[in-house]
Image (cartoon, rainbow, N blue to C red; front, side, top):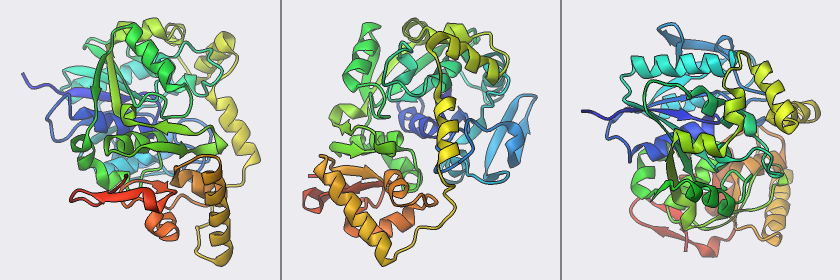
Length: 379
């Protein structure tokens, strides 16, 4: 029997890309199907929270519940969706998950997507490990998205597994903590390699997700300390950052009590209120506050003297704090805010800009070109 899992991203565009990176070890199918929120960071989509079906132009509807994002799909008004980028740059079928009707509505969407695409199982993918958090960890910033997806895959007809890739790479939970929780339930560990990443270099070159980019970087042999968004603590990138832990749904739900609390929610607002009662808040509070205080990223990144001076100051400060890598997103945020334009950032960085990933190598003398693809790696 042909094995074809429905890949379900737990947190939005970055997890959708990560789901494609880990898909090679579960199926040889050339056109994977990935279902995901359109929930991007402020720099990409300045409107707080996930987007709904009504926010998109030029999409296709399958059945009653399934909306497919196309290469030409666009958000109405300001903002971009990285799901359109995945649809343009990969062979994947990209399904929009709309959390407006809560966990119950998401459950119907996932079930119909699985049925219409002939899926034989459901594989939920999260980069970093928030999906197996207890929920009250001080460093946990985004419990709602992951826990709501976990709630939505309860009671599915198909077998469900949960995949944690790149422990700690999203800059929230410490990697050792994530690994310990995965090992507590005897999760199966594998490790991504260059072969897993190579088919997706086209989209990685321009994708803004820091966590998915660092996951790919680790699989390509990059190591170091990465500077990411919002002046967050440096993220360690090591060979173990390419590790992937897979567990049955029951194990993940045992680790994350928020999923059961959210399972019967009928609206996103109700899900928010459940989390406020359980843990005091969620990522939408942060996103709304950031949107209220931050200028819109509506200017193009130029190549003038002042921009180059600002870039030099930022790179020097990043080196002083111990970073060896910094994300293009962090640079855009620090210099602007400007619209995210990886080609413009790469032009400014010169030899420090990775040609295949949206990451800057802060020490040119410690970067080596290896292999036939010309991917920059740490020596």
